Image (cartoon, rainbow, N blue to C red; front, side, top):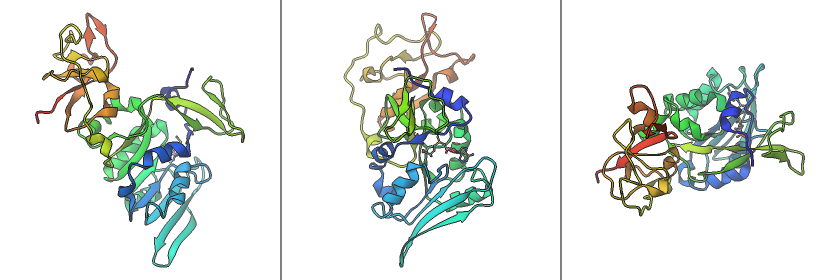
Length: 306
Ligand SMILES: C[S@@+](CC[C@H](N)C(=O)[O-])C[C@H]1O[C@@H](n2cnc3c(N)ncnc32)[C@H](O)[C@@H]1O
């Protein structure tokens, strides 16, 4: 099946892909302990359409939240926020007008961000770098959806390398269905319309990124292959062996190994150390080559010395 790629989505300025409730539920089950007594902010979420707002509203008591805030973005006019909060008298909700347009970078939204403990959303793909930079600047906990390609962004990779961000649990391959606005042109084959008339498209290479701890990232990747130089040759242009499949990482190789970027789906920082991205290790920014032929993007890793 042909799918629209996130790169294409990123190029389209109106990246309004709405996340399915089931995708949110399937990820959030791994983080319940983090939410008790916390303020959650969904800062790219029109409450009319966003299942993030729906999810937290429905699970406000179950997660024992203190406060939930969502802001809606309008390109050219003032917007509004919705909030729910709990005090000794019970749960309250309110809708408030914003003076600005609900841009996550606006002063008002930054003020709300400062009040929040955890940010959870699927931000606009085209502003992903800026979006993450802001979360890091304000030292927020977060769980967000982004493109798999973000791994190779020069601002983003160091966060993964230094264990400031890691992958979520529930999406490690394939594509995901996202709802799109009614006027969205459906011209890829991976798209359609639900019985209730809602349009959707399938998007490849989507991942959850977070700095909330979860059990999966402490599980070792189980490996069985032994190193041999024929199967795992060294690159022409740097001192590391090439491994084409994550499940084939040799159990007994002490040096640096170049592995596909999907390695990060399985990364346990106690098992492996991330050395860097392939392109950082050559003076001309070239990827690893075998017999003069470039390989796909690789992450360089080695076993930790424990
Ligand atoms: C990928 S969509 C996801 C929507 C929603 N979070 C969800 O997952 O269903 C990104 C959303 O961000 C909104 N958006 C675009 N630019 C924004 C900005 N500068 N600040 C806040 N939201 C923005 C879009 O209108 C869109 O609703």
